View (cartoon, helix red, strand yellow):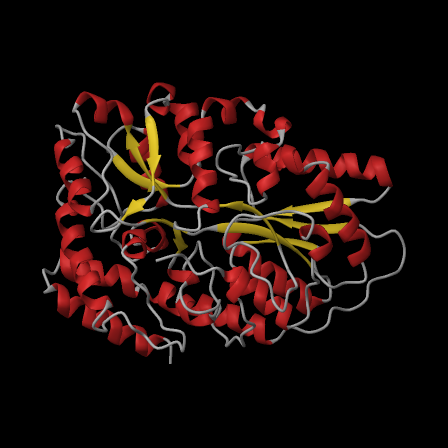
Length: 451
């Protein structure tokens, strides 16, 4: 099965209240607050005419990225006389900041977003402008532009794919081959349980880490949550046996994991991988950057692989992404000028602030010698090339809970935030529920939460 190509199949959809973010599951009050903000968007008040500052909301808070934006703001002002004011907040706070700015009459001109549902909502409310003049001249990786009627409303700057990391040195020492099936993956994980070192870590708790890291095995197996009419099909005759087999597989894999998989978060998986406590785990490119800093010997022994299906026929990765939008304000023209400069003259410099983690979405960048000359990209060129292949090979399934269904929509977001899928894992692994029953309960809950 091939991944759904949103670039071809994207259709505009109406959004309900109760919006969500990909990286941070909101608590009940947070969901209601986000929905209220979304439903109350109003046209921004015009600001005073003149040479106004460009207000830029940044959500990439790494030390080098913050330093980059501080530098380019000064550089752009020296170059053009236009001030760029950078506000930086964690990504989970971005949509609230964006909507509060609109409602108060002091909107941002450019903003960082991490969920395509928010982009589509802002476009539907006519709060952002198309960016085709910035995107049309380039070729892009798979499933990343999400156009509405051929109009692209965001500038995606990186993929955040969840890949499986593994220890190349341990594979060599133990004579292991890369697994192509679930059984082989379990066998390798079991073989690498040695004392305090565990075989794998894939979260099973009710959190975003589990939603992102633990279900691409299902996508490789061809499992879908919805049909083209938004009917839940997790428990139909085709999907149910596959999902039940996945639960059996994860139960075996759980036996190779360290204590605490129920509570494991993003940072727990990262620290276990970088610390050498587990032989397999999922994450994006940040692993190599953290290992290079904290455990360089181990960094050189980390490899990556996609998720695999039950029978060895299909590969998948868990989707992730980040990008920028330009809001419709009385400062949109200058904001577009700044974005044109940022995404051409300074794009490579921006990506170099997290060189392996910021996986390019634009395919030309992979051939840009200035980008390739970065020391980290050169050192991990093999991994970088694998990552490029995963977003250019149409046979690789590229999806996630939040991008399931025939088009981006609030319904998979509700499934994401209700933690239906992690609870299905817990019912099987911790409560020892029959696999078929666990699937039935998950499907029933999905139907309830998307009403």
